[in-house]
Structure formats: C-alpha cells, structure tokens
Length: 210
Image (cartoon, rainbow, N blue to C red; front, side, top):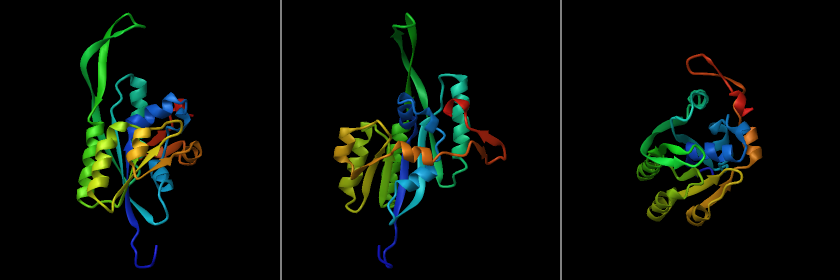
C-alpha cells in the first residue's frame, strides 16, 4: 500500500450458530470462549482495516444450562466495541419421530440467522460499507448472496473463513478466496477466564468450555 492509498475497509460476518455447533461437533469446546475481535484481526491482511464485526445467532432453547452459557458468552461479546449482535429464533413447525425416545418430539428449526446475515451483507455492499467482506461459516446457503456481491460490485471481494475440520466445496468455488481458521488461531484468541461485563459484573468462562 502506498502513502496515497487508504486501507481497505473490512467487515467480518459470523454465522455464530454454524460456528458454535461446528466446534462442538469436533470436540473443540475449549475454544468456544472466543474473542472474535482478536480472531477477526488475524484474518485480515496488512492493508485492510477492520470497521465492523457482525455476529448472527439464535437464542439457545435446548436446556437451561446451555442458555446460561450462551447468555454469559453473548455478554462477553458485548464488551467488544466493534461487534454488533443480531438474534434469530427457533420455530417449531411440526413434530418428528424420535427413534431413540420412541415418541414424537418438537422439530425445532433455527430461523432468521441466514436471512439476517444475507440482508446485512447486501445492504452493506450497496451502501459501500466495505471493500472486503469475510464470512465465518461453512454453510453453502450463503452461495447466492456471496455471488450477488461479487457479480454486482467489481471492486468488492467476499472471502469465506472456515473453522478447523470443516469444508465446503461450493463456497470454495464461489468465494473470492478461502481462509482456514486454524486451531492455533482459536487458542490465541480466547477471552481471559474472567471478563468484566459492561455492567461491571464478572463474566466467568463456563467450566464446560475449559
């Protein structure tokens, strides 16, 4: 970058629900206490400047303990001044037969996370809020919005960042590039075990995430 060139504006979009269950499935719960500001900066090149982090998820409904862990983590994320949170919800459209339980159970589906992320990505592109967008996800549902930005804005690029052990050939084929988030990066970007919340309360890393 020359002296006359300005840094490229970068926004990081996080599919929080996809990221959380990806790490959980891989047995990497010890990295869930993640500082996304620090991680986002590791994903940038020297000529790029982080201007916003947008985190998308839905409220946990599967148990009281998991909801408490999520609330504690969301409060920790709220201490990051560049991060804005967008919440979806779960919806029960029907019941499904549980082979293990031998009974019908609610078939809950996460709603609005994908729509919220897609909307923010497209609106930010049209408002020229970024030069570079980085999506942290392995969900191929984002192919269409990624393709829309790349095809309609010649100078904008959209990269996909994928967590350890995950992949998506479809995203690899359409994105401006793929960034691999390594386990080492996750380890380097953890919050301290105790974080002072915005209200002054101590937020303690869940024991299950150690």
